[in-house]
Length: 244
Image 1 (tube, rainbow, N blue to C red):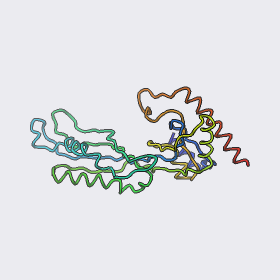
Image 2: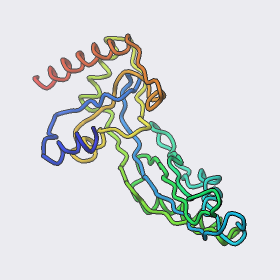
Image 3: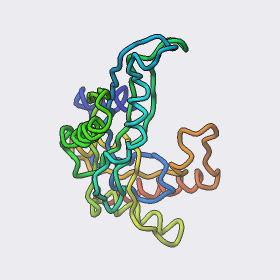
Image 4: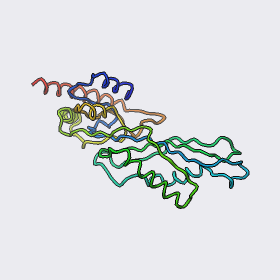
């Protein structure tokens, strides 16, 4: 439950476990890293006018559209071996008041996913400002500003912890082989365990992130049953190792 679950436990001092498995969909592969996120609000300011005389105003939606068409330019040229490259998504847009009015404002909520190693919000925001300045050189009426609405650190766990090794052994015992470790492109509760309290953590569960947040999320029953077996093997193996 993120801020309303694990974060509450963190604030109450209740995250003191020896290890953690975050059961997000990883196709039953061992996930060791996840992206973070910067939610950015872009605001375009214009000048209102009657819809019949648009040349007397400055259309804020048109200004935002110039920015949207070049949005991919804000991404840096960097890549993480497990979670890949950063991403950016124009998620929610609002603007205008009526068909016969030139809109004087437009707001865009942007989801900019960060990767391990990106730790400075100002560094993430800087390319947005540079792009806006570049657009203004060609279109002086464009007035764009950016504000950070939320920041979530990316997270990366060590590959050689007891819980990761126990998971790999359990997967081999159940499936005969173990696939390479993976990264998770979304944001999970692993960030609290890894970043805030340094608890050895893996992200592992049945199903695929490719169907998450879609109209018909699903997981194969066979994979669900396999996950139960693998989790049980991990528990036994990890607790047995701790007991020794």
